[in-house]
Image (tube, rainbow, N blue to C red; front, side):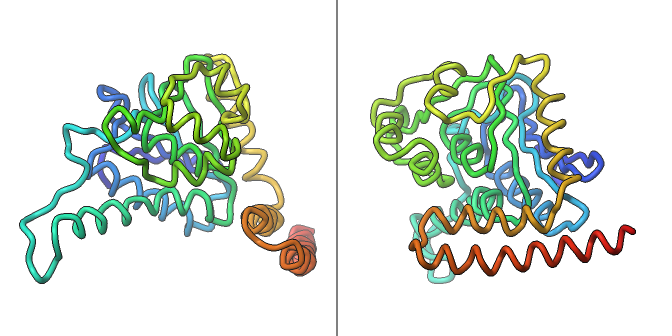
Length: 256
């Protein structure tokens, strides 16, 4: 695996660290691909009960590295399509990071240890929880480069803070302090920088050591509730209640 993404296992918790501290962990083509692979591996690894995503150094993720160009493309041809098609294919594949963080059947936490911008907004937003240090800042920043947004940032922010605030954040593009982002509901918890890692891992271990099958169905319920009809949600809650309690009962019997 690329040294641009580091992984660490800590008693059921998988810690995934973006590792370009000199560039505030801005995303290059190689880093995006390595991150997608690391998240996919965490999603399918049954030994992992909770996933924590963070950045090395003093930043979480500054978005895409514009010096990298966003993605590698070659001249258009009938086999790989136009430049636009190639860029779409490459970016959409790397955006699986956000989809998996949101949909994997286990809790995910963004440990926001510094500035978050651009695509980093989507990565943090894709996680179930966002624990931020007081040095963290928040800015969508897409307007600064004449871009519309990626990595699910518009979808997640609309769900987290509502469409009115999401539009404010995207269209005005103002930089928020950690306190302001917490007040808007972007961050789940606001912590002192020197306790951020310990408190995040404390919560992660609680989740990893908890009823994993219950969390699986709980997360499915919460994801469904974002878009499903009232009646369909009731039906699925009833089904998942039976599935989760049965699974938990089996686990308790095995542990006796």
